[in-house]
Image 1 (tube, rainbow, N blue to C red):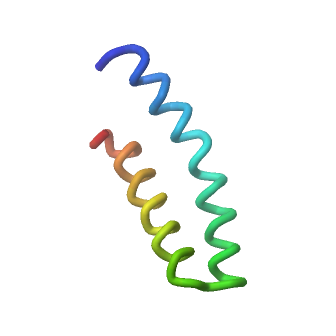
Image 2: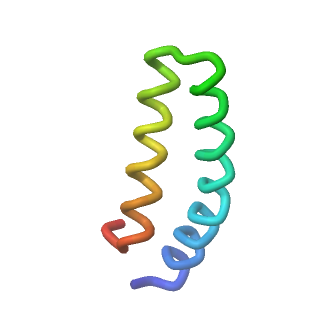
Length: 54
């Protein structure tokens, strides 16, 4: 892979985990359909980066 893509993946991976945690807490406190979909999308993105799909 290209070097810039590896750096971008690492940056997104390090930023998205805290965002997932905050979104999970928000979803527990104020559950809406949009919050659930956003949490699911961020979780799929994190898994994709973690398992090197992206």
